[in-house]
Amino acid sequence: MKKFSHILYGLLLFALLSCKKEEIIAAEANSASASRALIGTWYQEAGPYGALRLKREYSFKTDNSFDRYEKVINSSGDVVGFRQRATGKYELKGDKLTMVYLQFYNSDKSKDIDSYEEEIDDLIPSGSIDYQETVTLEYHQMKNIMMFKYPPCPFDHSCIGNVILFKA
Image 1 (tube, rainbow, N blue to C red):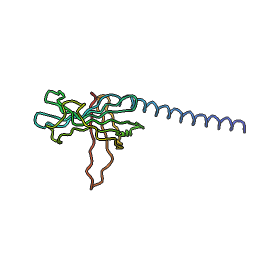
Image 2 (cartoon, rainbow, N blue to C red; image 1 turned 180 degrees about the horizontal axis):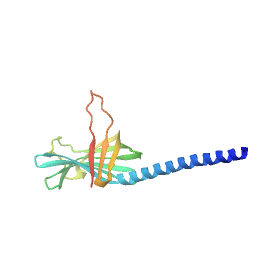
Image 3 (cartoon, rainbow, N blue to C red; image 1 turned 120 degrees about the horizontal axis):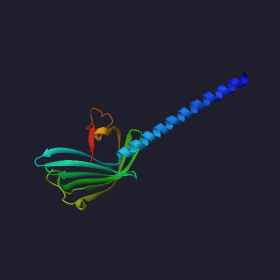
Image 4 (cartoon, rainbow, N blue to C red; image 1 turned 120 degrees about the vertical axis):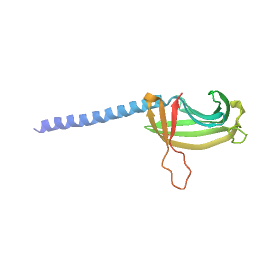
C-alpha cells in the first residue's frame, strides 16, 4: 500500500508539473503571437484641419526598435510634410507594451498644422531624452486594429485617452 501511495503521489506531481509546463508554453506562444502581430506599421489620423490632416505612424521592428512619425497629409492621403519623428526601443510583456523614447526630431516652425518641414531630414534633433510610456494593448486581428489603453488618469491631470491604430 505504501508503494502504491508513492506511485500515486509521483503521478500527481508529474501531472501538476506538466500542466504548469503547458501553461508556460501557451503563454510563450501567445507572447510570440502578440509580438508578431505588433511588428509592422500602425497609424492613426486626426483632422481634417482645413485641407490637411495629421497622420501618426508607429513602425515596430523585429529588433525591438521603433520609429514614430507625425506626418502632414493632404485630402488625397499624400504626405506633404513632417512635424515630428521619434526613435526608441520597446518591450512587449503579455499585453503590456513599454516604449522608451531615445530621440525626438521636431520642426522648428510653429505648432500650427500649416507649419511643417517638407523633408524628414529637415527635422531638428531635440537632444537625447529618457521618456517612457507603458500601455495595455488590445488587438482585433480580424480588423487589423490595435488599441493603446493608457492607465487611468487622476482628475487633476491632462491625459491621453485610448488610442486606436490601424495596420498599414
